[in-house]
Image (cartoon, rainbow, N blue to C red; front, side, top):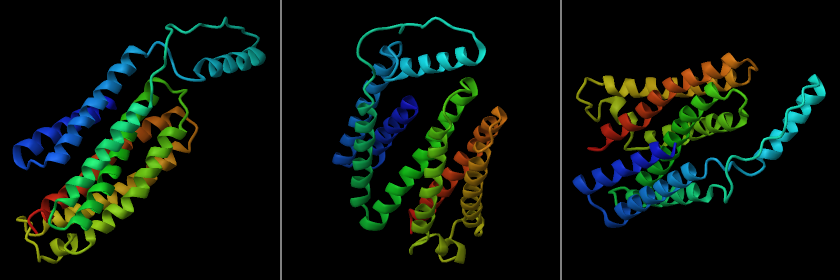
Amino acid sequence: MRATFGLSALGAVATGLLYDPVGARDLLAVATVMVTAAGLAQSILRREVGVRNQQALAEQRTERVAQMTGIDRSERAKAGEGPEFDPRLDLVAGCLALVGVIVAGLVSVSPLLTTARLVFGSLFLGAVTAAMLLGHWYLVQPGLDRRFLSELVRWTGIFWLPVVGLLLVPTGMQSVLSGAIDDGWGGMLGWFWVACAVTTIALVAATTAALRERQYAAVMAATGLLYLAILTAFGTDLVARALLASA
C-alpha cells in the first residue's frame, strides 16, 4: 500500500512540475513522497519485530487451541528485537497529501467546488484502492480479521454519495448528459459515467454482502468484486474530471 500510494504521489509531483507548477502543492507532494518512503523503509526494516499485542494475541489463540484439542504448542519468541514500526508516519503522509489536495483546489477557477470535489474524490479513490490492495492479504492469510476490510468497503460506499453529488453540482455532469457540454462522443461518455457510478455502489453493496459470509470463498469473491469496483470508481471520478475540465 505504501509503495502504491507513494508512487501515486511521485506521479503527482512529476505531472505537476511538467504541466502546471504550483509551488505549495508540489512541495507538499514531494513531502508526501519522502514521508511515505520513510514509512515504507521503516516497515521493512522493523518487520521482524512485529506489532503491539501481536505476541499476546498469538499466545491467547495457542492456549484456546490447546484447551479444545489438547495440542500444546511452545511459545515462539519474536524474530527480532527493537522498536516497532511507528504507524504515525502513515498518518503524517496522509495529512500532507490532504493539505496538498486542498491547496490544488483553492488555486483553481472555482475554488470551493473544486476543492470539495478533489477532497472527497481523493478519499473515495483512496478507500477503494486500499480495500482492493488489502483484500489480497486475506487470500494468503485467511485468519486476518475481516473488520478492517469491511471498514474500508463501508467508507468507499460513504464517500460515493458526496462524490457523485458534487459532480452533479453545476457546472456538472448533468450538463454533459443534456448535451450542453460536448463530450466528443455524441453523449456516450456521459452515460458511461452514469454506468460507472451506479455499478460502483452496486459492487460496494455486493462486496459488503459477501464479507458477511463466513466461508473463505466469500473473501475471494469480495476481492474479485473490488477489482471491478476500483475500475468503475476511477471511471466515476476521472471521467467526470476530464469532461468538466474544459467547462
